[in-house]
Amino acid sequence: MTAPPEDSQDSPAALAEPVERVGRGWTMSLSLANGAIWVGWYGPLQILLASQAKDFAPGSGMSKEAMLAWVTGAGALVSLAANPFFGALSDRTTGRWGRRTPWIVAGAAGGALSLLLLAGAGGVWTMALGWCLVQLTLNSAFAAVTAAVPDRVPRLQRGSVGGWLGAAQILGVVGGTGLATVVGGIGAGYAACAVFTVVGVLPYVLKYPDLRLPATDRPVWSWRSFLAGFWLSPRQYPDLGWAWLTRFLINLSNALVLLYLLYYLRDRLHYDDPGQGVLILTAVNGLTLLATVVVGGVWSDRLGRRKPFVIWSGILMAVATAGLAAWQTWPGAIVAAAVLGIGFGVFTSVDFALMTDVLPKAGDRGKDLGVINVANALPQVAAPALAAPIVTYLGGYRVLYLVAAVVGLAGAVLVGRIRGVD
Image 1 (cartoon, one colour):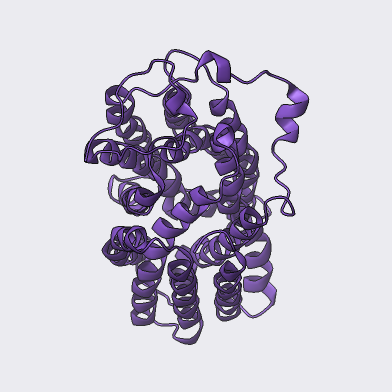
Image 2 (cartoon, one colour; image 1 turned 90 degrees about the vertical axis):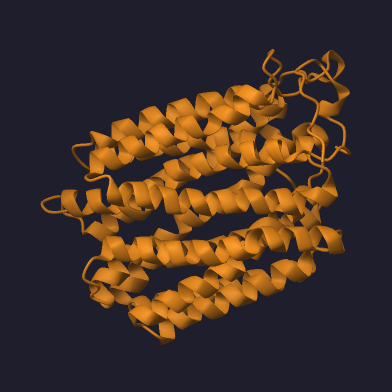
């Protein structure tokens, strides 16, 4: 395989459908950048925010569950707007460093500073502010990293590239969880995640210059048209609408599983060291995900088909989630984590390729992928709103995981409504 053109001169290739296969170095560097962003997100989400909520809850008038739900929900609201907004800005960026690179650099640096702010949080308000800033800045970087794929990768290579990005994503989740757990203390955990976030993006931004828009294709700025462009009519683009909905439902199911995992281990399974338990489950999930994420993407590319992979992986995840409700033991949790990893590995790579296949316009790749990525962030808002009353008033963790299984199954079934992709 050959690398993409390594020049940052104005080029029609910035808006053309890519035809030249990208090289392994490009894929690995972009994947490392993606993983670094996920370290910055999931060290806090898996361990650090829950630990801070436990410390800040006494005397605040809120339970630790409610505080965690409120803070993560506020951050998710920021993420909802930030991802498509920065994606649209990167589409229109015309500087010498290209469209995507400036936002990757600024987002990673801003994310690191925001994580350090979280490290010094003294209460729920600074905790919420810091997490909102983390979501704002890291979504800037993530929008640009995601848009680089349809910019540079031909369609029949996107499953395999999506697989490597997915592998980096789960390694970022595991790495962030590990850093937050083993370095010792909340402040040190945030600092370690901040350093990794910055260092991880450097190989890509230093070695692979971005393509720039040719002068004739630079869009004319209008705030009215800019804001109006965020609405993508499901009637006009039905495949995009169904793809968005299915991703939202499956991610909502996954968010319902993950949100209270630390508390599930502590309060329901009475696991001796719930923080270590989360790390073990994340590692098991990561190992099985890694076993399928690249293979699933490559297989999908070779067959030229996307939907069967997404449908069956979604069904498998729903079955595993239902297992958490039926088999509430530590061995049951390990088995569920393993099966979820198998399904989510295939889903991660192939669904990403499917999403890039239904994008309407080359000039709006960043913005449109940002709108699609709302389906990743919106579940973070919806999950606390659903999970907190279910756990507190409507039957506890058994009902929570049954609801999550039904939601995920609905997402898998509705993939069949997408018509323009096999």
